[in-house]
Image (cartoon, rainbow, N blue to C red; front, side, top):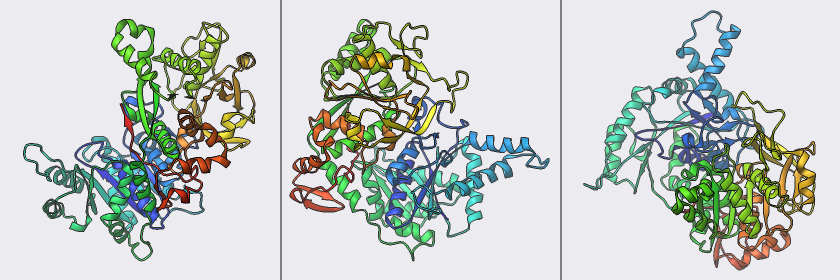
Length: 600
């Protein structure tokens, strides 16, 4: 097993996750099998109880692991399925070591950070790196490890020590350290400054880690004299210093690394030069080119609680992008704070109220994502009501589905106090109830989590058609409340359709309004499995419906011709430029993708 460690210096938010993912893409393009590990030095056992404002979205894996959002980047970039153990935290390591101590596994020894914690970290890495994540048998060839935080953080110290020991444990030729650092430009002098990176590398070396490669973030490409200065003072060969300058979208990064021969340098450090092939990255180039050719906008309102931080809905944004590019449209996202749609805001802040409603009324489609807590819930209900009454395409995810059911019960069944017991425990008409198996005393890891079956009960529903008329689908869940089974019959008689249910037939998974052009709610989170080359069917349906093209997406026989007719004159297919008349074969399953996201 070969290991590539990605660390960060100077400041946080430099893009270590994108860099690690792009290195993985580059190595995979060379014919190597790649897996990934993310190390988060915080004391939390996992990301499950953390606010999105603290750490961005919580990404959910097939096995129910609630993990850092960077694992979502790894899965999307590399098209792999990771496990909860691919996210290492200080909490997990200490919990593991203390459990062993309680069992007496240390035979009376004094349990210390060194060697017990550091040994546990190394053993964890070796064990997880050997788990296949790409659907093939046997371990991967290379494991890319990202160390969260920046060099010098107090909480990172045990991991840095462990990784220093690990580099000697696996031996020279099996370990490559890539240090991502910042080379700022002061506006006053306009000169690229190397001192922050020099200090960062000095701290890294002082901790026992020697960088093999410097990946320097900057606004523009590093000047040659700057690279020479970094090579001299950081003791890194000139050819091992790469520039990760600002680019229009992140899909340029793998190609940017390839153009600087990063694959040759990494393969040399890892003694892989004799087996790696020239990386095939034309697909990435085609995605960047395709992004530039998208001009027809599709405007989607995301009505949520955490709209001031886009990372809180990162997977939702990526899934929208995948679907928009599949439909050959430029995605425009309008962030609508749910609480600003409520009547209280009209009194307290009329300008915010008017602005929110102006945004909502100007979109082509509405998406209400998942969330917890009662703040903004009434605003989400109003957004669902507006979309339902005005025939605006609507997709509700998790809580978004639940508020759609509540709104329908209030407006159509005239149950004006209909609510969720999460927000109003004493409601006379509980549309949404706490799941019996859930825990009311412990928050972490007690929800209904991970990939579970949703069986279609309405075969001619829009959602069933979008999923290719499958009998069932496996999607990832994260919830502790559900639609009240006792109200299902009454809701269905009023016109609501529960198109998919769980294996027991008692838990509602997908809700639709057949009389509406596109009004769908899903209890699961379809965004977690969306990929650049395979957009989530429900997101694809939302975008297509918002463009007036839903029929062509639900009818595979006409989808091919429809997408060809909407392609630019020259498009990139499988890495090659072709005339649109030559077709974008199977574009629904092999579509391009870019990160050219426009928001306001």
